[in-house]
Image 1 (cartoon, rainbow, N blue to C red):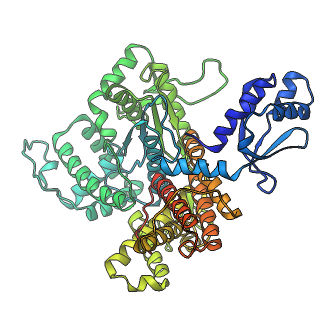
Image 2 (image 1 turned 180 degrees about the vertical axis):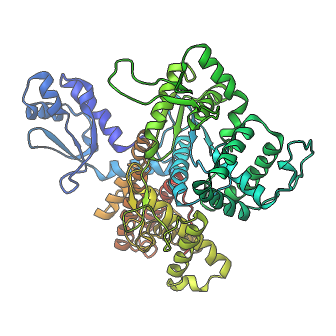
Length: 589
């Protein structure tokens, strides 16, 4: 069904063609000047260059060729050839009625669905989630939901960091604490204990202690490096210990992500490439893609034309250990073979840009990825504190994600308890509302910024019930739920949507018609901030409409039923957009 702008584009394309011009100039878009008109067509200016004619005359010829007078309240020319468009209210209402009747509210699925694998999250095993992991998970989850809503076959993979030096550091750190564990006995043949020797709390202590010790203790650093090499080579005790670390970490990670309403289809990691890793390296050597450089093994990825200078992708260090680039290359190899994706989207911060350029170029050059598979880095900026530096605790340390979730939840509880009606709810419901509102504040604050930009996290501002915030939009949705619930209690039902009779009602109708275009734009740019802005504008439009009209006290039954239907479709649109952002809506507030 599309948008009103889509319908108008079809009409104006016909008009351009009837007037003797190319149809492509008939594009119509929402007006930049709503005080002057609702839509505008600027194609006459571009057509003037091709046809070497006065753009205003072209615009007049197009207007004269329009064959749908019942659609327009007014068509006028402005400036050198802009066509300003105002629609008849009946035409607007008829469109919104179709939006109301359509389960997808005018949003069409793609004509040719693709298989899209989204790599997001990227936590490291045995390390606690911190605020640095937040953006990848929040942005990635939204991209997954948008792709899926449009009809694509989507696979979301957390892609765990579970195979690097941190594993060797933890192994050696645990050896210092419990040297008698069978995992450290090279002659032990098993079976190894089923119960893990560590808790998530132990791991959260072990890694930072071992990491700090590595910096000042060369002997410990060498032992950790050697343990990493032996783990990757398949030493049974280390593999068993590693599996414990992984299982304990994944259990904890699932709980944290679920609190954020984030869900992965796959819980794979770097380790899942081990069965193919060295075979891939040997193939690249045999086909002369990989060469030795100062004792290491690399793949050259410079452009053939010499316009771009990029360091080679290192596959193996001098000691034979593999690196992130190696496992990323093997992961692409695995994904191509097992899932045949049309796209692989990497939601990873901007600082990894060069790394992915190396990996992608190496993938295409070596044939690991076919040209038909699009490899795409969807980079993002950092979440900063008010000092403009990466967000930290008051003590200056990196804040754990679970602590941040607790902070925003507590803040939300303090805010909602100022709402008189909420004080009457039982504690369980208040805690649930506080969690939903807190997470909404956190997610919306992140997603409202274009993903490539850094932003400053201001808890007081983002948890406000006014302005561009998650709580503001939730409150608008809950307000509509309240209107519809009270209408139901009085036996009042939604009806057909009538022509708007006020500016606020008309603005709401027009805003509802824009949803499909916003969803498409969000997908095309992989930028959920467009949905955030639309949610704010829609909530604001409804709030103006609500304050202008006494919906439940309207004496005209048909008009009241129309307003209830308008409220109903607005709620559906808000809930749909919030769901695409990964934000839940409480039943009441």
